[in-house]
Length: 145
Image 1: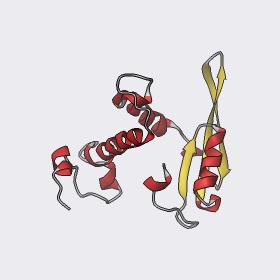
Image 2: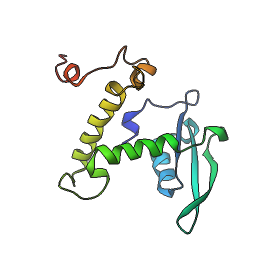
Image 3: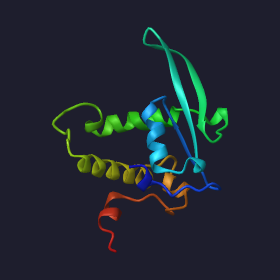
Image 4: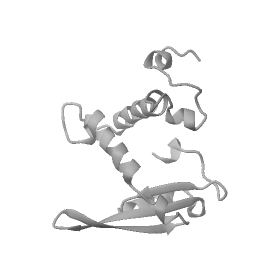
């Protein structure tokens, strides 16, 4: 799913991915991208009695500076997803078993997060120079192509 959501990475313009220590992430990256075009690092939480006591940071492919290896933004984004889209928490009335429905909800949320949600008047799309100003749902829904 990530492959269709990002620009195709190159050796010169590498994709940076940081995740937890889930082993299936390594295979997913290998199956979707050229390893030479990815800087992939992991943050592994060391737990003692269910309490995180340390973080281990490591590069898997490529080279990411240790101070850039962090899960704060990812943890925050996942927390926001769980708050706003019930299907990412547990089975509820809003739970969807169809993958396409899950992807559609994520598309809608990402549209909101990238083009409407703003911090001090600036959206992520504006930072990436994809948009000149924050959009509204009305502007998105009534856009004519």
